[in-house]
Length: 290
Ligand SMILES: CC(C)(COP(=O)(O)OP(=O)(O)OC[C@H]1O[C@@H](n2cnc3c(N)ncnc32)[C@H](O)[C@@H]1OP(=O)(O)O)[C@@H](O)C(=O)NCCC(=O)NCCS
Image 1 (cartoon, rainbow, N blue to C red):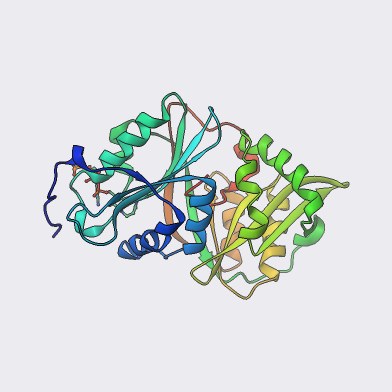
Image 2: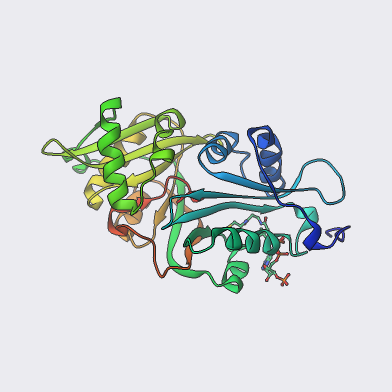
């Protein structure tokens, strides 16, 4: 049973998080049964802006967090909205979200809502755009022509074109995030068609899995080739948050041993849809950043 708040909500100070808060952020994840994901927090606090509320009772640690990754005036992504179990259902998440909406001004917002977050976002005026299905499991290759598309490890020379392709597909420039991708990811692959870079995918570590994202491809066949290539380089189970509109890829992943784990709802505020081309966006880098 959560303890009553010792101070009125309006008095709770929302402060910027810094890299010094990384362990407290990971502790909050653990409190909610999420992986600690210090590695992901490192990326989020470097490429995005973290906000936190210290324990209102004067205790140790954070009562709440969220991260805003800004992509210029056309989009900002919200992620990692977490409230410690001991402070649940007292309006802290709503308080933090209202502050984020206020700070965003005219900039449209996007987020991937868990079932716990969905009612709040709906109340705040976020609209559903799509569903993402989280699939996890050990990838067991099946013979069947997955390698007919040219996929190879990315090199430093690919980065400029990769960022250009990404801007086309994501709809806004995210150089500040992608510049960190080679260090963040364990693997980065590109897909080519007649020497032209048409897709790419990364795999990064989280709780003894390899998370696939971003996964950007012109078609399902290329997405499959990228996943197959990433999977072949690791013994760890895979995880991906696949846009459920890409049903063909989901079926294919399940035929290769992955199972549905959970669902999130992609939502926007201040714009009817996300910019860019969803047909080439198979999975986000992380649901916390889009
Ligand atoms: C989702 C979460 C951030 C809500 O935090 P909170 O501070 O308890 O939420 P609030 O007290 O501000 O509640 C706002 C409204 O959201 C809804 N809500 C909050 N928690 C809910 C739950 N567990 N189930 C259903 N609705 C819920 C309610 O409508 C609530 O209003 P009410 O209490 O007046 O009915 C918190 O449960 C959490 O950290 N969950 C785990 C991480 C997570 O899923 N985060 C969302 C990522 S998208």
